[in-house]
Structures are given as structure tokens and as C-alpha cells.
Length: 303
Ligand SMILES: Cc1cc2nc3c(=O)[nH]c(=O)nc-3n(C[C@H](O)[C@H](O)[C@H](O)COP(=O)(O)O)c2cc1C
Image (cartoon, rainbow, N blue to C red; front, side, top):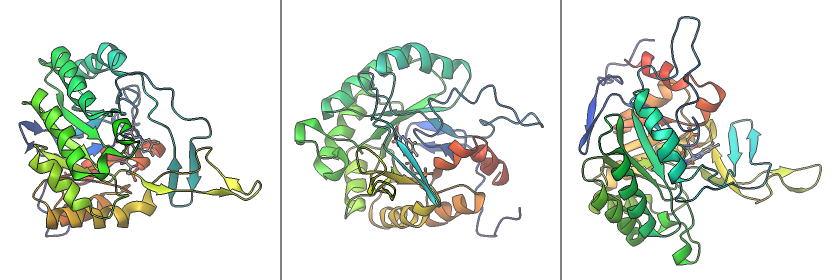
């Protein structure tokens, strides 16, 4: 493809984010490429890999304890995306540190570990454990704090809705991780995303990732009931691209913190729209589930 003249980045150039140098600007988004290990047996007929040229793989979100997730069905496909209600199913921090992160290091996968918790203090404790186990790892670049989940201490409201709670989660994590990049994943389901991004930046985050999924619901006309047992889910995929672009623009213009753009990207052109607005990197989510080579293809086209 021919690139427009304003586009002077090279998506496969390394760039600094906080204390870390990332090897590229095209990443995969949390939850859409598992823990980042499942693509290692895959090759294109030309020998390409789903990891070629990627700046980072953001792992599935890990919680202090294993979680079995929400009842089935958890995913409902729509013409312009999907609504999911996975419920943060994951193996838990101990198994992740024993079986997953060392393997990612061996395979030299540039990794950002996504963390979620039920009270702010757990972010600090999880980061401390990570640092104890992986302090010497070269390819573990940082942590993405997923704040789109209920804060049990605050009556179950999402952590990511209140600037003070955002700041306390960030500060507790930053204190344990002085030499890794610290990103905060923001929910778009708020009136003022820029003030949350600003709070994250002031508390020590190196960047924010925007956006997580948009609250959505679909109805099964054969039963007249919502498709997902929990009624609501998170909408993602092509339909959320304009929402993600608007939220990124709001943050770039109102908060002094670098932004990693995520939401609805499945082509190089769509990734470039985020870079045009000032994003420092982008993440590919839902599109990666349909074709695990999507992010690598985008990285190749923008390199
Ligand atoms: C099936 C599925 C699982 C997801 N799991 C997580 C997760 O564990 N943690 C997280 O921060 N985001 C999770 N996300 C959100 C994505 O990382 C991303 O922010 C969102 O889907 C928007 O990007 P997209 O339109 O490219 O998918 C998940 C999305 C999907 C579709």
C-alpha cells in the first residue's frame, strides 16, 4: 500500500514508553490473543508468524486467583463486531507466573501483562509478585492495569470510573514496578474519559490504553430475551472504531499522557487513523480472533 505523506512513523521502529523501549507500535489487545502463546505453531505459506513485527502482546487479563468466568454463551457475533461477557476467565497469577510468563520470555515475545483485581491493594501485591519472579526478564516490558472491572471495596462499581480510585491503583502498581512500563486500560463507558486519563498520568502511568469494550446488549428474537445470560456484555470490533477514535482524541487533547489506541482496528488504514490523532501505538483485538495474523499484517504494511 502507498502511505499518505503525513504518515512519517515506522510502525516497526522501537520507541520509548516510560522506562522501556518497545520494539514496535502495533500490539495485540488483551483477551484476543490468549496469553500470547497460542500462535507459535502457526505459519503462513511464506513462513510468516503472527508475531512478526509486533511491538507487544498484551496478555489475557490475570487476576490474583483463577477465575472460571461467566456462564455460556459468552460471545454473540453481530454484523459489525461482537458482544462478549467472558467474565475474566483466567488461570490466576500463580499459574501464570509458573507456566506462562517464563515461556513468553523463552520465546522472546515482547509482553505486557494485563492485571485486574477486586480491591486496589491487590494491584500492588500482584505487581510485587511479578517483580519477584520476573525481575530479570528482558522481554517483559510492562503491565496494563485493567480498570474495567468491579471494585469490591466500593460496592462493585468499576475501578475505572473514579479518578481517585484510578490514581490509587496506579500509585500502588508504580511503587512496585519502577523499571517497567505502566499502562492503564480505560473504559469508554464514562462521561469524561480525559479526567480519568489525566489522573492515571499524574499518579505515574506511562500511558493509557483506550478503549476497552462498550456496554452492549443483543436480544434473541426467538425467546424475546437478551442473548447473554448476564444481559449486558462488552461490544468490540469494527462498530466501535469511531467511538475509540473519539475517546482517543479527547484524551490526546485534554490530558498530558501518551495514548495507546485500541478499538475496531482490522486494517492498516484504521490503525493510521489513531496515529493521525496522536496515539503512540495501537492494539488489535477482535480482528485478531478472526485472523491471528492481522496485527502482524498491519505491522508489515506500516513498516
Ligand atoms: C473476547 C474478548 C475478551 C477480552 N478480554 C479482555 C481482557 O481480559 N482484558 C482487557 O483489558 N480487555 C479485554 N478485551 C477488550 C479488548 O482488549 C479491546 O479493548 C476491545 O475489544 C476493543 O478492541 P477491538 O475492537 O479491537 O476488539 C476483550 C475483548 C474481547 C472481544
